[in-house]
Amino acid sequence: MDNRGIFITFEGCEGAGKSTQASKIYQHLLRNKIPAIMTYEPGGTEIGEKIRSLLLDEELKEKFCEKTELLLYFASRAQHIETAIIPALEKGKIVICDRFNDTTLAYQGFGRGIDINKILMMNEFATKGLKPDLTILIDIDVRKGIERSKKRNRAKLLKKELNRMEMESLEFHQRVRDGYLSLSKNEKDRFRIFSGETPLSELFEDVKNEIMKFIEKNRSCSIRE
Image (cartoon, rainbow, N blue to C red):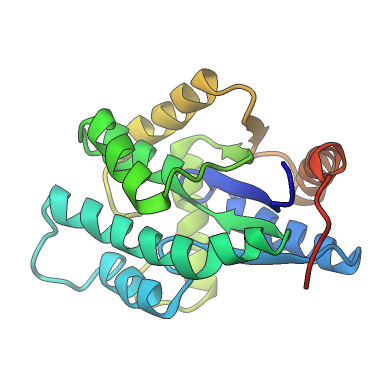
């Protein structure tokens, strides 16, 4: 990987637990004095946060058309790549990202039915061709995932049990899950699949071991502050 850092993404359906695992891995890297950043999509930058708020707003009266939704995700990603991800990788850091282009392929491609080739072409432009080195896919039954999301949002005392994306039909979420599994079959070298129904601490150990093994194998770069 020359002097570039390592780009690791976490993917999964709603309620799979990927955000929890991504955060725990990031904390583990910091405890072991491995320079790393943690970020997420949509968001990760000031501009991206504005776009995220719009995309997840469940109180909007006007419905997004599919093209508008897709373009907003790519606008957030282009800013994210330019101002956060690439600069960190150029310093040799480990970048942990909660969602990336596989989310767009699964949700807007398989879920919404937008042409996959068009999404790939747009992503190439938005990301300057950057792809994750390793992708952790946390897989879960969609019904169980949505129930988890409801419980999480209740615990946070949010106004609504589900955000705009979580409120999609179970059929939509099943297409998304099927999309993720299809993507993972096509890129077996990049994806590592874990069950989101595994107990939290056990799942973390499994994910941590896989990631640390990958880092040790590929971290030939010298970290620069």
